[in-house]
Image (cartoon, rainbow, N blue to C red; front, side, top):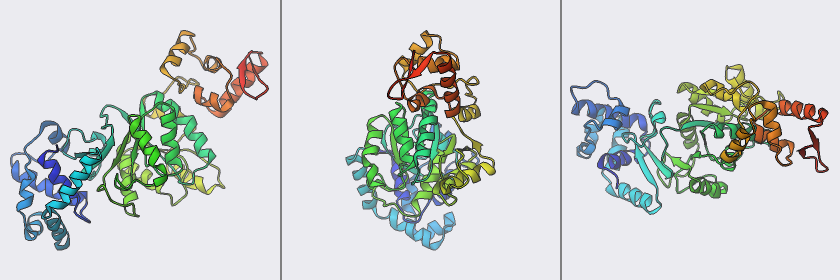
Length: 394
């Protein structure tokens, strides 16, 4: 059961062409009217401490009041008045949400993600399917081209498992290509992921990823949208989605992106929000890498392995030692074997034969470093390749 303020904020958000900036203008004026002894509102404090704010007066206002009291345009005021005057609009949305097990959190709720609340004009309400936001968790955004290729997949599979084993939740947009790679790699690594849709939760896009979204929810992750439940995706919804991806994240990695890619919108949003921007370099003749290379020229952090990201957050692992993406039980086995050096990590990962790609994921080492280690061990007679090409201990 939603509280009255949440219902009213939801009602306001359902007005066509009325965005967060307009609603915040209304909230700010009402707060000052009802709390004359306080200065500018701190929405985080209001969410935590429940400072008095009664939004029911919204239903007493006419179109003229919305213009005169809040400085809205005549068109905007009329749209807002028409919406809040229609109780069925709100009732239908509430019924749909309850029927589909969808939770609604508003900007004044303690369940609203605090990191998102800090950006300029965050979404007024969020529709949530799956787990609620963990305020204590570390969130990291991963975006890229819809036409991302094997290079992007290799980069994602090489980087994300180590982030996940360090407790990071991966945020992406649920699109084809790099987004899907990020979500699936996270799930395969036993991590949690957040999908931010550019559509309503009852019109998930792309339809080819509906099963993926269900898997995310069933695995303890979250699918979220700022849009009304039956909102279809359009050219205006995706920039808003990108802004939320970066807003939910402490940093954002662009894996592959053309010069005009939507992933670069996410990167620009991250910069505007004071978040760290990372990029995977690519070939100079590859259109899908042109955007990433441009970001790097502009000062984005170059990423070749997970440690390039971790060190920016004070989680830098010892030189040459990258935490492997393995289970807790496996980490304990490694610990018992005193595998605390780079060489030992490779050998401990060969408790059974493994391909080179499997070793990349297990060890967290980059391509050239793992190649050098295996070559050295082969010369020392410690490892060999079997008839299938997989590596094993001698």
